[in-house]
Each structure stands twice: as structure tokens, then as C-alpha cells.
Length: 329
Image 1: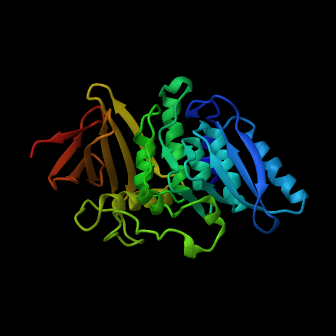
Image 2 (image 1 turned 180 degrees about the horizontal axis):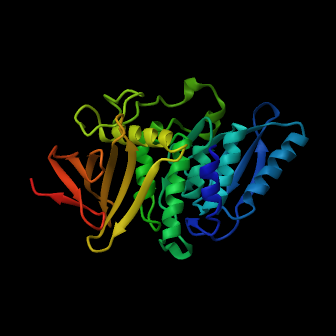
Image 3 (image 1 turned 45 degrees about the vertical axis):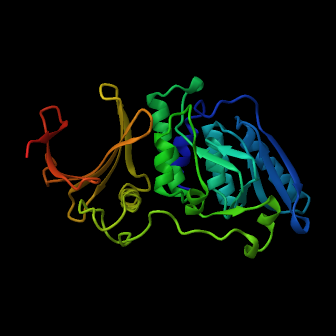
């Protein structure tokens, strides 16, 4: 786990992912061959991560190892979800959500930290943005959402799911379907006992969506967008930005009340040192309003942009306030 993201999330102890009601219940049950399964149910609250560690230590003291962590939570405190995720990741535990169970919001980080990850048929696993108490969005909650997205990225969550995480309002949940879960390596199971059996009885995984014709791992993102998918492009942009910024991608999100549009950007440097930016615009209902890729000149005052969906090219220029304004062709 990268320290930068863990610290960023820990500072948001008052922020929520979900509506906290009561602290979670952490119990253990017998697993295979004398091992134990730790079960976490209910809202994640301060102190739950410490209770989780106590359960792990108790199992070790009894000469037992932890087989997996089973989750059933609609969310809670974001910082606590991040702490649990870090512990699960470092310990190398697997995670699972039983058929019909729920794991959303802050719980999603803990689930994503597992290796491997299992989800029962009918399990509900979802993501959304962070918020203050009462579901309010503020500058602090926006910063926490970005930290959560970076942390999820480090946990191997694909960019399309991260996109839903940073665009879904706190009072809504983007529920992931089977194909999206498989894209992040989740094994779909018919019942929880299958998570303990051989891979032969696990449902056959489908290939990740929208991954054809990806750019090579050594290439830089380019405004010439016709060779591969948008999701593959964004995934590469985040990877390059993360490498260029000491483990934290240069991502930002802001909303413009005058146009009822929220904008998410990923910035990175091109191979020749010029600045590139990938932008996604969404309306208040989460529908995509625009997708574009821009590359600046060496002075970073003029840039060439491409509308991803139409292929139309145009130029932007900075005004005296430093804002980008489209120049008539």
C-alpha cells in the first residue's frame, strides 16, 4: 500500500461513504483445515480496524490462520475502510461477499484489497463518492474522493470502476455487474463454500470489457485516439501520471454550477515534455457530456484538443485569467 494514499484517507476520519448507524460486528467462524474466517458486518466505524486486528491476533494465539475476510456492509467511515483495506492487503487475506450480501462505499476498499476476491451470485457490490455527514459534498469530501480513487487504483481496481466511484453522488450507489466485477479479477461463485474449493467449480471468467487494442505499456497517451478504447486510454493516462508524480496521479474533479456539469481530469507529461490532459464531463445525473484529450504546446498557452466521440479537432488558448478558451477554427 502506498503511504501517500493511506495518509490522505486517514485524515478524512469524519467523512463517510454511506450513512453510519452503528458499529460493525466482527466475528470468526471455522474455516478449512482448522483455519478461521473473519466476518465483518454492519457500518464501519472508528475502532473497527482495531477490533479486526484483535480478531486476527486472537486466531494466531490459538494457533490458527485466517482463511479469508467475509464482508457485509453498506459503508461507514471512509478512513476506517481504508485502514481495513491496508491491513487486508498487507496480510494477503482473500475477501468475499456472500450471495445476497452487500459491500458498498467504504466497504468496497476492504473488498478490493483482497487476493483473491470472491462474490456470490446476487451479491451487491457498489461504489460512490465520499461525503460529509448528511451526504453533503464539500471541498474536503472531494479531496477524499480523489484519495479514495488513487487508493483503489493501487489496489488494482480498473479505471472504468474508478470513474463510477468519482462520479456517482453520495446519496446514490453504482452497483457493479458481473462483468465489471470480473474485470477487477473477482471470481463469481454460486455459494460461499465455493470460495474454499478448487478453481474448477468457480464460474468461468469473461474477458475484461473494453480492453481491445490497448496501447503498449511503454507508450505515452496521445491525442491520436483512434487506435484503442477510451477506458484503455484513461487507464494508461492514470498509470503514466502515477509514475510521473511519485505514486499519486494528477487527478482533479470540480463542478460548475452555471452549467450543471462536473469535470474530472487526468494530467500527464508526453514523451517530449509537453502537457497532456484527458477530460470527462458529466451532468448531474451522471451521464457523460463530453470526453476529450488535449495536448499543450511547449509554452503551455495553446493546446490542440480532440473530441473523443466525434473526432473533431479544435484549439484552446489561455486567456489573461489563465482559463482555457476555445479558439474559432
